[in-house]
Image (cartoon, rainbow, N blue to C red; front, side):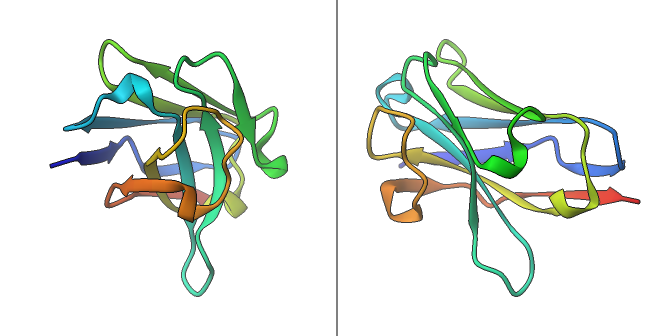
Length: 125
């Protein structure tokens, strides 16, 4: 059984930083690209960032480019999302997911197989 567990969310002031982590078990982690999504109440879940199986390529939503960095450690079966210069508009529940593909150019939910329960990020103004 595949388990995806996010951590690292919390409350931060605008301009601050947070680092999210996502640990995966039950799947050969290094075979799959990984992605981060986020969702606010009343809205659909939206793509944030993705990273290829090797970590060699990444893909970001335009609104987070230059502020967020996705990375992975295949030895630890973990993917990270470093979030800097946070804005109130970044407030959301952040989800990690395993892609059904090994490249990073995947931004649709149906391209991802296993999802975590999410971690809340709240940015105060």
